[in-house]
Length: 216
Image (cartoon, rainbow, N blue to C red; front, side, top):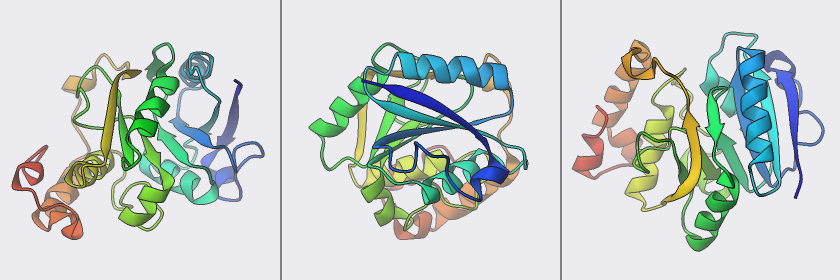
């Protein structure tokens, strides 16, 4: 098994993906603002993966927000699995090995929710998507492009749950270490967009009333 971390900026990523990640079978993309925090998180993710991982750490030098970074990265890369996470991620031992085992056991699953210590598999705040499934959702992007910082993962999770395509493994641990997270408000524009899209069933992708009432 091997792994590596590649560093770039969003402005550079718009031009091309760095060598070594274009065809990576499993690619994790980590937007970052604080280099030291991102380095700690990235090194731990690679060393504890228990499987081969390429991690692309992208500085948001344009202030575009993480959703734009993930959508840009997925458009420039290939490979079966795409992982989205943040600079405050903390990886458990063999986190990726367990995630891949869960996806192999559920070949119809398109999205895996990591055990983030908060949502217990009900929301893929940090997740791993099967690229072939993503093409059936938005035609290529990871998240609906209208979101900037929040709720893109929520909508994608609800689509996966509607399709019974959400996987979870309790040992696939990837925790968001943000001590002020619960008290910090979400992006008001993203919340408004989510509620608006929920009223339309996310363009007809979700019809279950219980799912549509979730997280609103």
